[in-house]
Image (cartoon, rainbow, N blue to C red):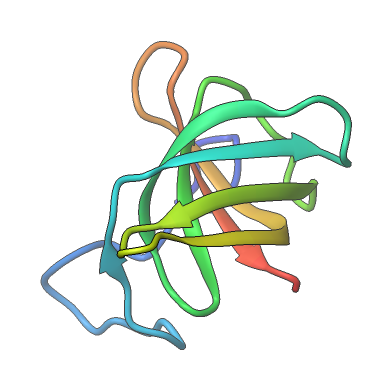
Length: 105
């Protein structure tokens, strides 16, 4: 079932997880830009080797390419710059969208 924005991500808990890479719960500030114009701000919900879940305030079309930058926690933090493709998106309230992003680089 979809919600009109994209395909829903796999349900969490109860059931088989078909993801290629395990997820790590992480909440860190992230910058992203649609096809590399100005950056916008959001927050990650989880991350894996293959992608991440981004919470943002904007509807993004499926297939949109994002330039993203964020720091992984650590001492010192590891700065990540990557390109990603929007694979799914669903509303999580007024002006908040959970967005699945697959890493391309």
